[in-house]
Image (cartoon, rainbow, N blue to C red):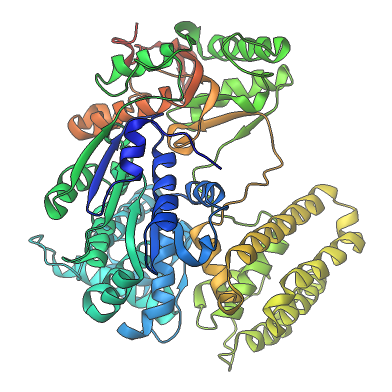
Length: 630
C-alpha cells in the first residue's frame, strides 16, 4: 500500500545512514515517519539485518506493528516494542553473562515495593528508628519519599556509573538492603529492568557487539521522554562505532520530568554524542486552524499553520462554579451527540470522538454526575496498562501463579496467606511452587475459602502441567463460579470474577500472538503482564475522561479542557517551584490543546468549594496559560 509522504517526511524516511534527530511538532506525522523509515530500510537496504524500533508505550508499539503488518516477515526482521520490553528480552537472553542464572520476576505494583521497604525497616535496627513512633501520616510520607529516592537512584544508574553525588552510610545501607530483599526472592522492580540490561551491555562488550551486528538500524520514538538510564542504555547499545540511529520527538511535549525524563537527552546529549543531523518537521496534517492557532499562541513557533485548511472552533468559557462548568460541558456534548453533524467533522459524531481532559482526575467529579443525568456514556482513560484483578478469587489465583513461577517469592506468599485468612504464615519444607500451594491447603480453616482454594489448586495444577493449558485452567474456575450457589446468590461478586477471567484470557491471547513457541512460558507471561500488555478490546465505550498524561499520543475530533484555574493547571506545586516545573506544565497544556483535531473548548470556574469547606466558595483565578490564548 502506497503511503503518502510530504517532501520533508520522504527526506527523513529515505535518508542515508548516519545519526539523525527529527524535531517533530504535534500532528506532523511522527509515527508515520518512523514506521515508514522502518518499512523503507527493510524493503530497500541490502543485507541481512534487523531494525530496532523502541517506543514508550505498548499502545504506540501496537500501532507501529499494525501499520507494518504488510511487511514480509516483520516479526523476524524488526523488534518493535517498549524500551522495557527490549531490556527484558535482553536479560532473558543474555542474563547469564552477568550471573543471572534464573530469570528474575518483576514486582511491579507500588504496594509490593512498599511492603519490601517495610520489611527492610523491620529487620534492621539502625533503620527501624526512622519509622518507629512516627504518626501514620508522617510514616506514609516517609515511605513514599524513600521509594521515590530508590527509584531515582536506579534511574541514575546508581552503582553502575560514576557520579559526584555524596551518599551517607545509612542511605546507602537502605538502598542496598531494599535490593537485597528483592534479590532474596529472585525479584526485581520496574527500574531494575533498565539497570540490568545496561549492566549486561557495559560489562560484556561481546554481547553489545552482537546486538550492534544484529540491529543495523535503531529508531527511537517520543525521544523527548528519555531519562538518564534509558539514554545511557542506548549509548551502551550503540557504542562508538554504531551511528545508524534515528530519534524522533517534540520538545514541547516533554511532560515526564517528574519521572526523571528530560528533553535535553534528545536535543543536546544526542546531538553532541552522536554528531546528529537535525531536521525540523513542523507541518501539521491533523488539526484545524483554530486548534493550531491556540497551540501557537501558547508556545510560539511550535507548529506550522500554513498548510491547515479546516477552520474548526476554539473558545474559552468562564463558568460561575464547578457545577455550572460541568453543566456547560454536558449540554454541549449532548448537543453534538443529538445533532450528530458538524461542518468541520467528517461522518457522524459519536461519544468515542469526544474527550474531556483535565490536569488531574478530581476536576471530573461534578461532570460525572451531569453526564449520568444526561445518560451520556463515558469511560476513564487510565495512565497505564497494568492489569490487577478486582475479585478476591482472581487475586488469589494471580498470587498463586506468581508462586508457581517463583517459589522464592515470599512477599506474594504472605499476601496469599492473608487472603486465605490464615492465623499465621506457615513454614513449609519445600521450595517447589506447586508443592507449596498444595501444602498450604492444610492450613485453611474457612469451609468457603477451602472450596474456592480447591478449584484454584486444580487450575494451578493444570497450568503447571503445560503452558498451553492456561485457558483450560481459567475455564475450570469459570465453570465453578457459574455453578456455585455461593456466587449465584451474589451476582455483583460473580460479575467481577467473570470480568477478571475474561481480561486474563484476553491478556493470554495477546501474549500468545506476540510470543514464539520456544519463548512461551508462564514466567515470561507474568513478566509481560508486569510491563503492561496492551488490550485493544475495551468493551467500555463513550466520551473519554482523562488526565493529560493518560491521553498523550491520542487524538479526538472534539476536546474539552476543563478546570483551567491557576493552581490546578498549572499545578500548585509547579507554581511554587517555578522554572523547569512550570515549563513542563506549559508543555502539559500544549499536549492537551493538540489532542483536538477539530473543535476545542476550554473552561474554568470562577469559584470552587474546597474539600475541607463545602459551605464557602473560594474565588479562583484563570490559568496563566489562558492569557495568551484569549
